Image (cartoon, rainbow, N blue to C red; front, side, top):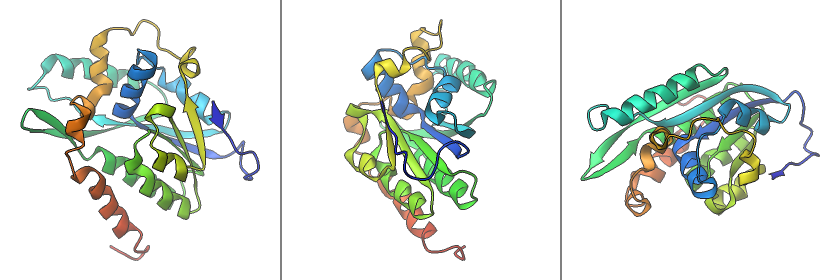
Length: 230
């Protein structure tokens, strides 16, 4: 379930920050478990495994109230539940239409920026990235070079080899991993809208968005220039 190295000098007392790619998690849960109503507080406890949790950061796209009012209302209910959960912060990007396809704007940049900024400010010892997206590999490498440890949590079929290779440790999700941390009673399919966010469009269409991987990389190149850079 978890690839945990016990000889790295860490353990209890480590400060842990969890970064959840909400859309990526939704799709992997849907594909591997057939449901998506995870209890985020319980998931955080399982991932930290007794270490000190700084905070859970959840990232996704804000639904468009004009384009789909019902989906927007459902997402607001979901976000209210997150706001009422201790130690969880939400970060919401936007989307724009490209033809008939909704394309995310800024979510990957937000994840990469927070990973870097919080490491820079020494707010955590360990970052746990809940995503299998290989676009984050460069950010993970940069955070490691700043002296932090980075763990990645994902289902094996949804985990990019590039991201798995750069992670210090890997939490391999399985249906059994979530068997006792579902939010009971939240089986309404409308809640799929809350996680779905930027990847509601077909995956092959997402691959046609070239700015997705290059934007974070250009930002990281500037960031790595040194502490004196403005």
